[in-house]
Amino acid sequence: MTRILLTLCLFWSIAVSAQQENPEMRSLLNELNDPAIQDVSAFRIFDNVSYVGLNWVSSYVIETERGLVLIDSLYGNWTSHIVKGLRSLGLDPADIRFVICTQGQFDHCGGARYFQLKYNASVLMTAEDVELASSEQEDNRLKFPLADYTLVSDGDVLDMGDNQIVFVKSEDTPGMLTLVYDAKDGNETHTAVTIGGTSTLKTHTEKERYLDGIERLISFEQDVSVNLPSHHGDAELFERTRQLRERSAGEPHVMVDAAAYRSNLAARRDQAIEHLNTDDDGNTLQMIASAITSVVRLF
Image (cartoon, rainbow, N blue to C red; front, top):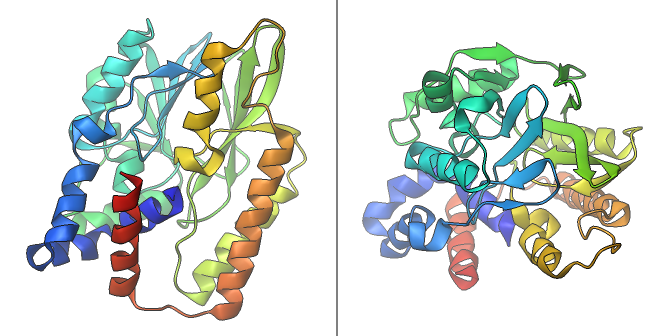
């Protein structure tokens, strides 16, 4: 279901164009900005990793000895949602040292400049997705304030002292990042990933690029056992973390599941291969209409 939500996001500009003549689309777009629907109280997942995102798009904060690292910034007025969430966790937003944008699209990086101006955070993104973010400024419906970006590349490492965050290009957008970092649970440390997106690409070249990115993650040498995706449904994050409230001492952490992560990647690869073999761009408006129907069921 989250995959459908992301489809809607990627075709946002077309959807906004259609909303004048499509009351159902207009209603859905209102729901995606409705606090009554999207507001999710911040919660800890691991000792050093917490969720500060919405009901449809994720944002995480990693606590380190050198300050806070924010993964994706949300957008618009939702920046205040992150600030409120941090404070509810006992964290000071002024301690944000870095905002990492996994993609150059508005829902992932639209609020980054706010954290840069307000808290002097450095905003990290790939050159390819800085170009993507810049190109979206040509459409007033997608416009968001651009930050002063620090460019990162595939294989770069952000050294936060007690945590090393590795950047892996895994490609949905041209420079999409997957982040690899430590998630701490008591005396145990697990390798976590945040994959920047889910493919809804259309052209043959885009589909090939995305498949290559998934193959890279599958062959990645680190022993990944925790999946914290940019859209929570890709790992049943909300469903799983509800179980944390009832966790007894000594029980394993519900998000530590290497088999589920490998299965998730295999499903992504199969989907990418299927789309590549079909190589049918389809009808965009028809795809949006289908997304509307499915998302409305979700709510």
